[in-house]
Amino acid sequence: MCFILLIKSPLAGNFFAARCVNIRQSFRVVVDQVFNQSLDGNLMKFHTYSLQSVLVIFLLCFSSNTFAQVTLQTPNETVTGEDIFVVCTFCHGGSVQGNDRRDGPALAGLEAWYLELQMHNFKNGVRGYLAEDVPGQVMHFSSPMLRNDFTIKSVAEYIAALEPGKPMALNAVGPRPYFWDSPYAGLDSSISGNAEAGKNTYSSVCTICHGEDGKGNEALGAANLIYLSELYMTRQLMYFRDGIRGAHPDDVRGQQMAVMSKLLIDDQSIADVVAYISGL
Image (cartoon, rainbow, N blue to C red; front, side, top):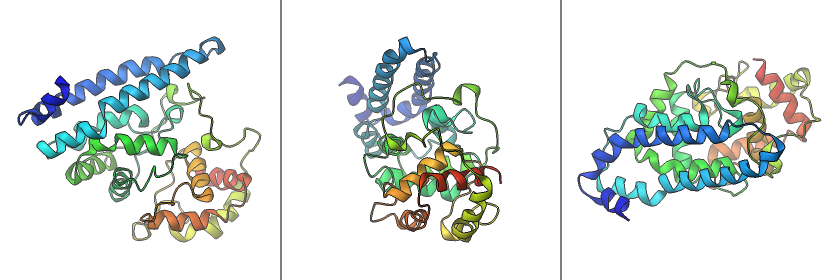
């Protein structure tokens, strides 16, 4: 209650904006300790419980109501992309090079226009629209921290200027430290991608929008694919194919991708095209 009253204070906005980065940095350090512990079978129950606790804390700290109050009382357009960026690193890595263990894709290497579009989509509920998109819903419910158009544009421009292609941190690669009971958690481990087969599929299905080099096309709303991890691309293609992403009536670009993804008739086809894209 005291925290909410503080935010409603006319002078609270600048104070909150100045302090939120330090709060989030401390939060990230605590959560790192949870995520980076070993995955010994005897500790799995502990890890599952810890993840639930972390998500509850995260949503309490960055809830829609809290940030809506800050935005309505003191929009404070001086909160820059660099200030907000530290929050992104929690899931996307210190240099936003991605974190497979937290299901966070690489953002470095993506153009500002695409980042800005996707942040608006998360904020407006166009992405993370269905419950099956668990990481998308996490992004949707944490998006109020983006606050307004100025901050979204600033974050996008800051990230777009970062050096792409850096490897994931060692603690960002490997199995998730939590259970995700979902068919979209990843392909069956028995499925191995064939890049040669994927090349044929990519040429006939993907090239028209994403280009032969996979670097995308702003006019068509097609993203740069070459810095995205195989795990992330696989999940997004499954989402599009199965109607999880591109389901919102306002997601025009997503609906186009959903149509094209239905040409990937099975999981093997997805694994093949992802294997080819990863080699571009």
